[in-house]
Length: 436
View 1 (tube, helix red, strand yellow):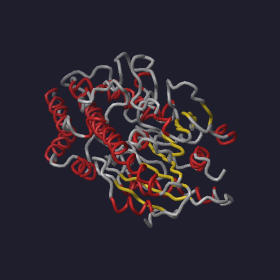
View 2 (cartoon, one colour):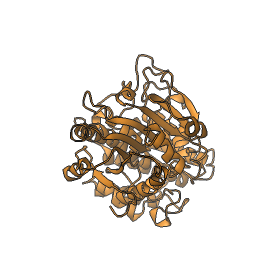
View 3 (cartoon, helix red, strand yellow):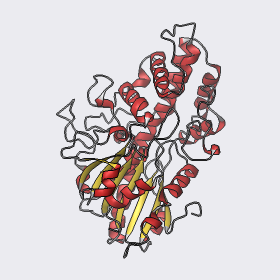
View 4 (tube, rainbow, N blue to C red):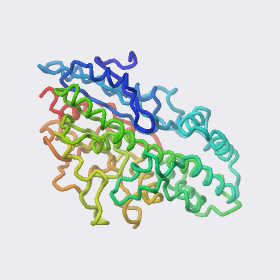
């Protein structure tokens, strides 16, 4: 716990099926606090990166509460098994945390291969063959076909396991659909699409208009690596939902019994935002100890809370009305500087058919961290300045445009991880009425 500077701090760990470390859960219940902020890291984090994120994000809280009376704030870091691609830069983190942006070649370094092997046990040979293809970059369609087959094999999951129940952000999602459909389309075409998307984010030079067979296909292997990244993203997306609903939600219910006076404030970044949101589905009936939820650059559908989908009005979001399980607001902080969610996410969602209805690359495929919660009636929209000056409503969904501070970061993710700002700490405090 020495890596996180605030006190009292507890770590709480879940496995891929949502099972909690019972000893850590019991230590969490022993905290003598009035309020407890629980933060869930996102995809592309290991425990070391998550711990440093918590240390940075929590650092302003004690000073912001220095004059508050009657508040004893506790802090928790949620650790869950997610993927770590080491070539993605993270703003303000030391170089050892990630390889430099624009590192040459689409290959997988040793740490990324190790992370893949740990998260998908028993598939080490698959990981090594994927790495070999990315290193060699053969210019044959058959090599791309093999790559797509290997990616499918890497992330496949039993249709009757927990992960099959938490993969969709829409009510109409097929629970038996455990893999994104982009893995069953022509791999070369999908990789070309991702190569173009990477060019839009500034990660790669603008590709040639014609990437004909027998010439120019080496460039498409950058798109192949992005296909692998997005496939593991979907595997981790399912996992985030599983850990939230089957793991964190029941733990919050147990805290309501053991520590009934403690006010819980959930915070999540990226897919960690999906995790804490799905925890609302796992809350036992009648539990009202969650006083606020703050979603930072949420990497899931902006329609997840919708009562009706604009493009499929008979269906709603998977979290329809979940905000009513919070005794306070659900606040979505978003930024148009987040190119991971503004460019790559919509393309990957369309290719995965991750929505109800298939139309075009448009609003159907949008991410909450890019433009906020959508299609929920009476959801106000605030600038960050207005939210901090005038306060945040005491209930319902609330959108806060945080682009004034969430703005730095290199390609392909842009500002997706630029969240360690005092202003966002103040949003958490305002949403939870902590110290006010």
